[in-house]
Length: 464
Image: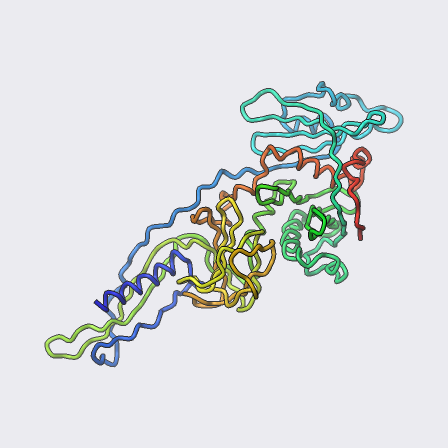
């Protein structure tokens, strides 16, 4: 009976090593054999032959919608730009007459008809600022196409005035750690983590940092609220041409998201970096763990009991990412969330689970310690430290085991086909998002800025 219980314990540990993804190194650990009350064993244990192979059924992967990227463009509207949007609209639409007008041969050029447009899947939205007429409030023309419809929807709306407090910083086109000390000090500490990763991803859009600079726009979303990143732009210094930008889309009923104007997946980058690490030792995919134990066999024909090594190789699915890092390395929350668990679980050791809404949760396992005072029910902001790297639970060395799950089913964040639902910009969000894009473009200056004073009129805290 006791031997049956011991067998079950070892099988359970092996299952933890696979389904809970607790091994950090390529060579699996060999747990110490449990104590036995059997008769004294022979001095040397004998091998009992090749390992027995047992296969664990793979856990279910989360069902996610097909990835849909959003592409944004903006500038001064002309016929070429209109054609590139694949919208069933031409310059005869009221409000677009200026597009088809020929440029004057002499004198100043025609005024810029500022626009921004977003394409998400088969849905396109065009937003065109309309010149102010007399003392009237500025307006915008919103043109939208929807899947399966040849017709378009066009409407005129008042151009909203942005009252958000903003602060602008100019950074060198280099990673955050390489910025001058005064530039790093000017950035609030609570956004350092996300700025570091967003900046690295943004800089990859240019061949080199030479001849470029970065514009960081910080926003205060409300009275007493901490600053957040509103936009991060990579700009060609000489021409003031925008290379790429990442813009924050705030939501009230869903988690917000960062949207790259050229389609780069900036939000994914943040969900891939919970800890500064040396390497990734294991990702999501097939995995195996070998458990070897010493077993005492009963004596036969009056002889002595024999001790043999029995190995069982368990084959299953590794459902998380193992980040190898020194013990004590800080671990960051990848997004705003509520602490569901800050405790110990079999196999995982010390672990934190954060709930991000819509059924999405992140797991942080094998921690050596938790941030002081961390407990279930607490709210954590993106980038906050929740604990430190350790090797608790079933582990062969210091590392962070990290998982993303939706309703308990795993997600591979490094699979480009896996995309969390709220990373996508819904087409209903196009108009509000495009207004933000135009506002940032106007505050950056240039021809479009001259036409959009109301969008760029956000009250400023200052710039540097």
